[in-house]
Image (tube, rainbow over the protein chains, first blue to last red):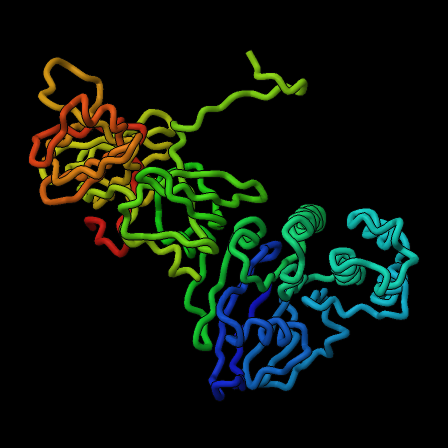
Length: 298
Length: 150
């Protein structure tokens, strides 16, 4: 469903109160990331869309239907808004099994849909367990499945994967993409993780000082470089080692570490934890076909 | 976090104006005039699809230090299009690799070659040399906030 939001709200933070304003249009089926420093209002935006927080003024329209409008007092209760919300702390019911958690989220029982979700998220074998007996990654899968159990028109993900380790995070990202491929649900993801944003989103909306400061595709927003190179990867610097007169950077691309030599007289220095864009020309990589038997193709 | 990705001065960068565009299918050979020296870059993409590919538009040429070869007293013919007349400012000698810091029309460029080659060519600060860069090693970039010749 397409979303149109135009709101104003006073936010209170540790540093005082500031006005938050946003005017955003999201096309049906997009996966959009909200990006920006903590406390800037990203979560508040999601809560306003979900009806968990009221704006001071403005409107929220989803698929042409008005969910909130301060001018005429329209305010659809949150349970009537077809939204799936996933939080970082999955907020599952501890006394219910996985299956019961999913079932409870449905306004009308739909067994087939529950089976489908248990399947997609690999929860079949865990369906009768309670959240306390599951790992963080498994619980987050349950939270995702539960958000989808009510067949939402919007999926709002508030840093859902930030507490997970890299491997689990990658697996869940793949599942989010799979779900999106299947149902094309309009999705908003709050994330601070650049590789995650690049992997999942085709659009980033950046908030700063209470308003939108940037809106575009991740490469344009973060790389700021319209380089013609065709191979571009976002990497995290893991290690910097001096070898002879070059620096050898160990970079994490996806979940593979790779080494890249960098001339050490650049003004730009790299330290572990830095994010970097790795670019190569379309002509330069050496490509070898891998046959299914693992030998190079001839 | 985006600041970390903003480029300060990375690799070798030269600025110029696009002087020639030769297209075949979706591939474009871009001629760029860098203060009177013609450089070429090749890219997959074509004018119309890539906004900054316009005659007299500004473009930046980026190339890795390791892609810059050094020639001294070069005679005969060589296939490389990008030939820059440079002066060696200084050399940073390592055991295996050497950085050759070059001055090209006031711009600083770096070439990373083997120390073996640096000594074979007997490179010294002040030497006049030619820097060679293969066309396929040159990346094009739209300058930040540039007025692209409209």
